[in-house]
Length: 347
Length: 260
Image (cartoon, rainbow over all chains, first blue to last red; front, side, top):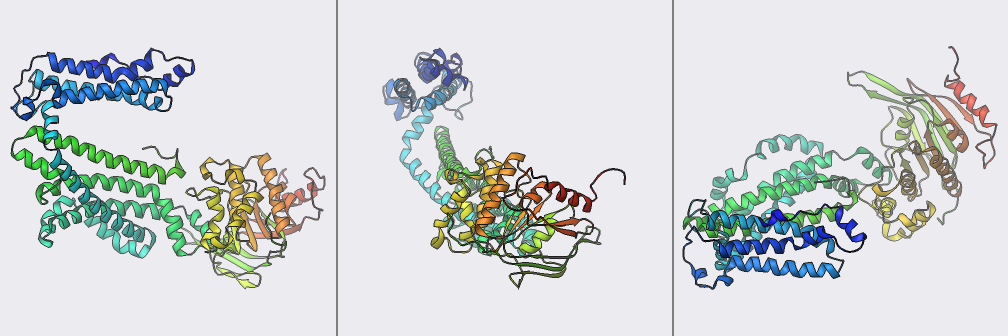
């Protein structure tokens, strides 16, 4: 495998090599590894005979070099060569390129392996495991409807998440701050909260006719519970000394809640935000595949019905990219908001 | 510099104050027993004594964070009913709000009272007063212990409290930082004329800074004796007369050593 020929650089070795003038072999190997992996994958794809017979689609009418999988490999090859050249003369992206390149090479290696065990060796049963060329072709084929689905999923996800986060913050602060609210609400929370949101689908669908509204309610519920629990535990665990100091500074109740308790609870609140986001992904996909007739979850279900597994996997790839992008945005947001405790949290 | 005339301190009266706490087994523990203490405006009084003598409890009562079980506390003639910006409080742990920068922490007293807009310029005055201008936009976790304690002092001072209550504020600092901070504390106190009540368990610190020292004994917490430190200011740490006060305090606390 191409990725095996390249050793990822030891993190400390990179700056040392730079400091002693002139790149040594290891950074060069790291930077060029994606190109090597892409060439190897191209060779495997072009010169090894196919064992599996893919169904004929419009893709097969294209000349070999215009197929989606070789095109993607060609793209990786070109970009990695350009970046290798850029980082040699421009120090700004150097660290990032050297850090990322081996990971891209490894990913390329994995895709090459996938190509091997499907198209080239036909080790996987058909038609459930198509090769990368077909899957990429499927994405290309349905790009318009996939984009529409992703947009629909995004709208639903953000609406439901916003509803759940807002509701969870409000109940969490009330439960965490006021002992009387806590007394009455805690037992109810303990009973209602752990119900899986998906188990409420029948109830929700009898309550409201509009499927978008139902899905928003379900996602909101799934997000609301972890948000409430973590916000309230964050609020009720605020160090008493912070509140004491604030009171001797002349703070009233509003200041104590909004300027002391909530900021102090933010690390907890962010755990709730992350847990809620994970729950919302799950509920989103389920809700889309049972009620809402749109979105990525619906697309997967729909293509599965036609045994179009290449498109199912294509949609899964899109879904993975979509969700991980949102997750990354939340991480970035957290790092910005919690920069005051940088070095304290590591997760 | 902070432009406010010296003498902003108020008189403090503690009359027959007692405090009982409920223990876990339902019985009650007498933490403070008939404490009486008069502090003149602008006076610096130290409370000294072994741990468990109730000096921190007394400070919390004066701050208004806990109500007394008996007796009465007055500041400037008014009975204390709860916490107020008139009485600034500072702990051994600086307790800076970690989510605010040094500047934000110092300003928090102004924000809490809704006067930040009108008096935001004072934040810079206080940053200058404690010599942390260069660290204004730094978060507390990046500060050393001494710097954090200076920032906490500035935060306690920004509301121009009439009484400043310090609960072992220098206890966690190393000897040298502590001596420097004592001088800084004295400078602030002298320029501003705040009434200052200092809880400490450092006898030399008490003698070095105080007008008077109230010696407390535990179980139940009582003020055993109040001694006047009749030394001129500025004092010298190696003044041989320190020894006289030192032995008096040790005697009251039964810490002179030798067989009982």
